[in-house]
Image (cartoon, rainbow, N blue to C red; front, top):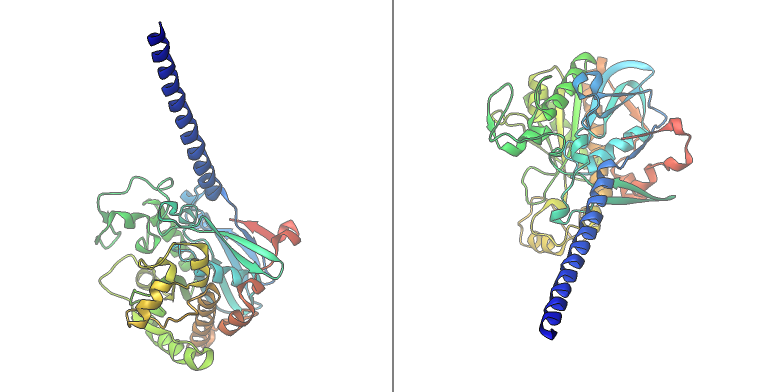
Length: 397
């Protein structure tokens, strides 16, 4: 009798431990799932600055995007005088946040005097709703401002598999037929010029190409960031047609703004890139801007919010002292203020040089801070507080 009772107690104890482990695993899984759900459905506020005249969407140019998580907002800033048209693209790769932050600074501050500036701050909206917690990426990060903190979502390089799936075994670029990696099917910067009945990212690229063609866009600037260990960083990437303006911009940036920015040629044989296909399939002059982002380098410490914002890492500092990096790097790192400031100054200088080369299509923009302004006052000084504004002055993406 005692043996049976002992065996029963042992069974009950084992069952209780199993139930307890199941409950703990369920709680942990539920907490993780709730965080990812919140990240995917978080709405980023965008303040409509004094220069915004209209807000549209990509689905106006590709109706099949309507109702998908790839349908991005399009902001129009139209000047009082006729002139050229510029298109600014942020968040092609949402794990490179300086691009969409520079776009937001334009939307919330810029006033266009001549011509039109069109801004798409969340080009790959699907990728902005998906990140890499398994690699230690933060789900969110915040920018300090004079009025508090402004919270933003950290994204990924490729669109979410929840929105575009399955990946092909090999991605065949349209229309050139070049074979690319399967994961490039969800990379918007391998999908240009796109097609209206293709994969989701191809439809996003097609929608932008239709916007470029229908609005007769003259200049396209695609904001990016690249690793300090990658040679194509801290630069302007431009095809042959844009090379003159890119070179003039690079020559003027150093004496005017105090930082270096060289020119890299757009490769002819590598298809799907914005700086190649936009120029080949439209009349627009494309430029892709790369600012250094230490966060994406592999030999760093933990992928923390602090690393993302300050760009300071002891391992990269050691590599810099050995001459292994492709950009200057010291104890100051590469802060988000510095990276966004470079994007703003370089993009403004591109518009300035384009206007000099094509005076009949000049584009005049004021109230946009430059590199020195962000270094002195910080990015947060140019971001408004959505909570203090009327509802019709704020949209969410």
